[in-house]
Image (tube, helix red, strand yellow):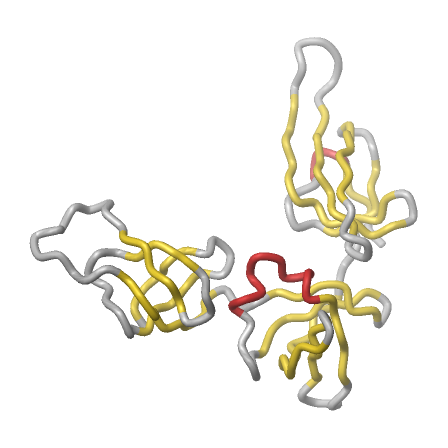
Length: 187
């Protein structure tokens, strides 16, 4: 595995630290008045989900781990476990439903998502960047409300509440960005 310097750590990097696999969630580069610069890294354990804050100086070497990514199809959820299938080998893999966090409602039956593996062990899953949803309820369009930054609340078919532009109405299909959980465009 390649080693990287402590100042090269970026959010999303997977690191091997103290015998465990961690993903860098948040990285702040700090240059104090006294002493050398360092990277303050908030990490999340890929297996247990626990969090850790660690300081890495630029001279510190850290193992960067490359995860193998496979596109898999979501089949169903059973007792808090998400079941995915490889479309080529029909092999099934299960992951804890908590792995998607607040993005879980956007997972739809039959959706193809990227599952990340390390040594044949499934560790995480990534939803597509954009998902199509239907608006179940929102306020009606108000004529003359054309302010550039005015948004109104809306409830999607999966129960998630987001804000949408005033021209979007009830029962319309929209595209939601799953990374920011915000309205992207009309479908």
